[in-house]
Amino acid sequence: MLELYQSEGCPHSQTVRERLSELGVSYVAHNPRLPGSEGGDVTNELTHGELVDAGGDDQIPCLVDTDRGEVVYESEAIVDYLDEHYA
Image (cartoon, rainbow, N blue to C red):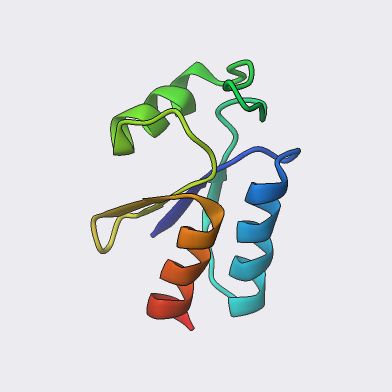
């Protein structure tokens, strides 16, 4: 299963969502906080905690591939990962 920790207002998250849609890949979206260069306000304590626990960083977007045990940050790296494993 793919889980995307993201924010609707984040352009980097939008890039990842668009690539997931282009590939037709199903995923679960989590919105732990608002976007911001210093980390936006936390909007969901539960998913924010899951984000930090998953990879150790409070950074969005973050893709968690539970089937492969992988955690990927940065939109370009996530798109490359998706292309490598799901295209």
